[in-house]
Length: 142
Image 1 (tube, rainbow, N blue to C red):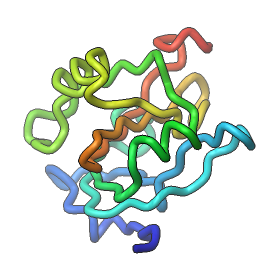
Image 2: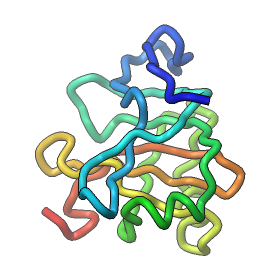
Image 3: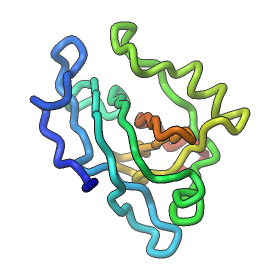
């Protein structure tokens, strides 16, 4: 399987909203400190162009959590932000609770994708993954 170049037409956007999707999704490498692409598929995304913290996405990755945690930067201050109610694949409350219990692990995708905004990716052992963008001050990095 190879990284997918994602187009808006292939995303199945909720409510027809425009979304800026990383294609492919990237996580920040522990070695280089730069975002590096990972394998991803089955994207769904929602968000407003020009409003960076409105972006939410769901996807799957075949990469194991073990590989990811040994290779990429864990993001300890993840705070999933709520998505529109009709975006059914993304549940911020569940993702947040699962991050607290260790059921899922959050990674830094990219710092300052817009001024003061970080992109975060949470991954579950079964390959489910979720993306959101949050203000850096929630992570204490502003």
